[in-house]
Image (spheres, each protein chain N blue to C red):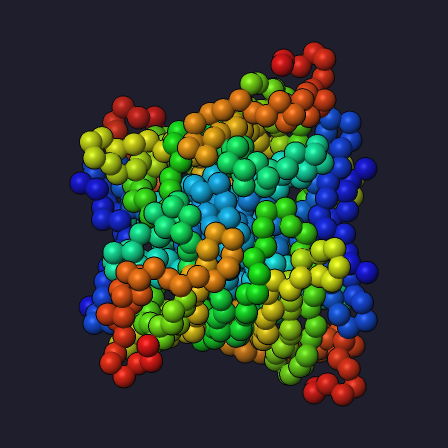
Length: 154
Length: 154
Length: 154
Length: 154
């Protein structure tokens, strides 16, 4: 009887995750506050990890570490509005020893082609609890490796 | 190919809506920050309105008004943690000319019975753009009326 | 040359802390989102602890524990708007072995008397990292004791 | 008796604004959540406008428009932790007909030189309520012009 909890899916190496714009996301200009797209993108990355079998919470609680955003660049194309259904499309593009780079887009479902709301490139690095960069766990790196095309840098 | 956007469902008069705890929801104590349960409850109320055919955004954009929280009381029973799947169960208990009272609970899915994380009573009032209480639109009130038991106060 | 970081002050046992409403605080209805008052109240409580010489971060990092909100009731009286200067007035009213109860009010500075925006009673309990209630550190309890009137329950 | 509401100051063309890290800003990794730096930067920009005599709220309420973030790039250097006093240093670097570009840095006060936590370049554009770019009001542009060096592009 319970509704299904939020979950995305993989379309090949592309991860798709759906969100909806609620009051909490908007500001008095009537549209979604710019920083809240980063929360949507982070939800999508967490869902991607979950689907890849990576248990972030266990890693934090065991003192191993966590991914932290190292840098990002985002361009806002069109504003999301209350009740909009938005798909976050994410794709890993580079895999390093301690970091992963992704491209993430927010797309509004529309009659006809989806409308691009925002697009970002984001680099996340694995960091130890003391904040220092650390090689990501081998199993995590292997999970991301399955998403990389043969021609992508590794 | 798109994943479904978040949507709850009605089990009779009980509205059920699923959320998941992400990084944005937690604080350094390792659990979900207390104010964020109110965001989850608001998402559930917005979803309830959407399923009832009430278009909040159109009402705001047309200058008719919006529901605003008038008062609430919440008791925290057990903390939600990262990645938890949480169901928000909501039930309207009183329907007035300008306000609706609801009981909302956050339940963690678990082996065996769900675990109660938090429960709240919340009264929302319809307010004009100038902030004054206003009778809720007749269609909105009628929609909520369908959720009230014959023995409930109206 | 640096501006002073946010800091409140005690007026006898009453703690006063100033915030301002920014874009992040508002929603599309044009006023401050209801859950964000709880963030303002939490900032004020954290400031109160800091002024009392209580180091929350050290307690969390040492694995001792932290205050968590156990329950609260809030009534919204008038909405805060962008750029409003709001004073959070907080007063401890009950001190137990593991918990503290406070009354907190959000007041808008105005010509004439301040305008009451919201008022809440909030009970915070000290909890161990595993989430169980724990007696608050003796020094913390003693610090709060200095704020209690002789006739208040202790 | 009231504490002063948050306010920054100008050191020549450089705007300085102080924030403090509270529970709401952190996540379970123990440090400030990456998206929350953008909220701090937005508070600083709003404060800059306020000090320049620009009334954002009046412009929104009059239906003139508002600044919206068009794009940004941010690099995270070191994490902020609970209770840290952080200064946001902002400087306008380009002024166009409909947009302003700024560099913003988050600096932790420390013994010795401040520690750089994050730095961003952010472009904000003035947009009409329908979301379309619009020339910013002449008085707003003139206010920003006072911050530009003669050798800066205008």
